Amino acid sequence: MSKALIVIDIQNDYFENGAMELTGSLEASEKAKLMIENFRSENLPVIHVQHLSVAPDAFFFLPETEGVKIHNNVEPLVGEKVITKYYPNSFRDTDLLEHLESLKITELVFVGMMTQMCVDATVRAAKDFGFECTVIGDACATRDLEVNNRSVSAADVQTSFLAGLSFFYADIKDTADYLSA
Image (cartoon, rainbow, N blue to C red; front, side, top):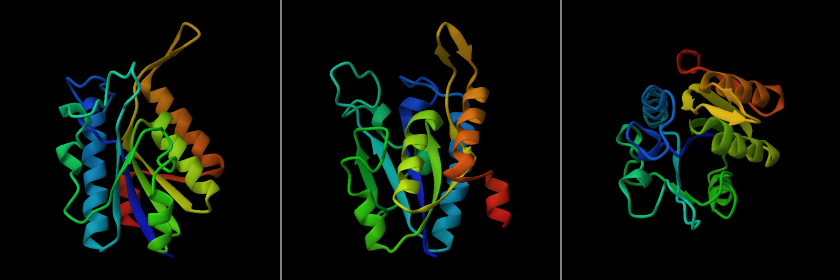
């Protein structure tokens, strides 16, 4: 089985002083960095996904801003694939699927941001395309949300979405467990 690491949207706007700061983004990026280093040391593909917002009402990930740039903790190396996307699902209107197929990848490991949006949408799509999926939960981040005038803490959002993915779509691991296996 051939595997690749997918690094989703770990971009400056999700960090302190960014336009859409997430809870625990720095800590998650540090875990993602450990995963990237592991994949690089094993000569396995690391694929970076970068979201670009072009909708008229967008306020983060805007073209030609510091916020849209991939965070320096997880910067791509020369030669690593960078996918630009415009939707939460990293497969939609990108060449991600074709790239993975060209490498004969069958297993994907995911790190990234936001857990309840782009990570969730991409993992579900990947499973639907037939990939075996693992999400490194502590290398992902989200934020507090609100629904029907009720606040939901980032920790509860994170737990809920990872629990939902674990039912069918992905194995959920933390960085230490994955790296020690």
